[in-house]
Length: 238
Length: 84
Picture 1: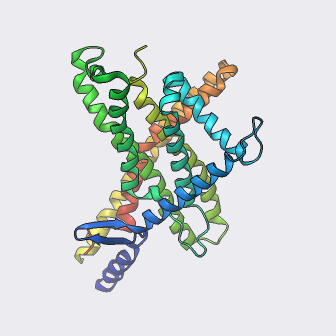
Picture 2: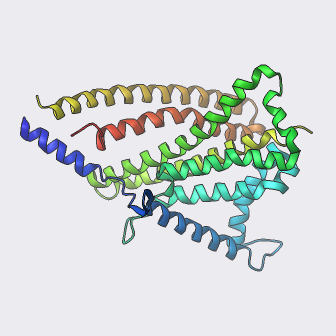
Picture 3: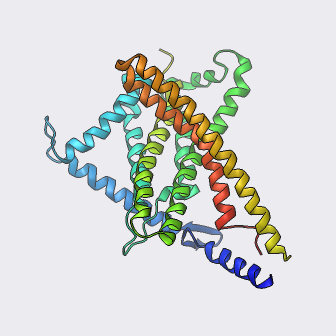
């Protein structure tokens, strides 16, 4: 009995290292997850290269890489113009394109085959997901005051003052659920992938990778959709 | 039994109940709304683009709670914080 428990405890200790964040203390008391930082920088480099090369010698009738990137931009343009209107697209449309592309490429980065570099998604870290959702939540106030002035805060009592607790609760829970949804989906997918690679021959985990690619796109789309809905209250009073 | 064995046993039962509830919740919720989505798309095929988009958004929203339950279950199985 004692031996089995000791073996189970040893295996749990070993399995604690399932997801490596490479935490490093860069200053007394401040710890940074270096794996997340490296992967975030790689995603940024990929995005910058993609869009810079897509917009070199931009033609009116696109083809090749420019066509591909225009597909994503027009996809987000359709979503934004549907909710925020022309004014919203001109003011902050590019923010949603950046958000969508960043989350899309982050989610798909963890699905690359682990040869040489240990690829993980930066969104499997709870800090990245909360950073994204807090940026969206706090940005609403900055953009709202810049667009509508201080009358923007009237939306808290908008249908009637009895709605104030409801709006406050919404402001608290929406960033929380957005971040946790993205984090949960991507982390659960990655842990399952690690376990499948250990258990089954090489072709079986690839089915899960295929499904995970779709889930990555879906979660990026849902996050962007919810961010656009958060900004609707700025452009609704016309 | 040793303390670790009791903790692991209890966690395994907890994981089973969590996954049971999460699977039923996710499948029932998604099934309901996808069924209604397909019905609406069959009634008005010209609106199926917008309907499909909204259906996907709702699927993501409904799935978020079971996914959070799965994350708790996976943490209990593979990175159990209670084991000494």
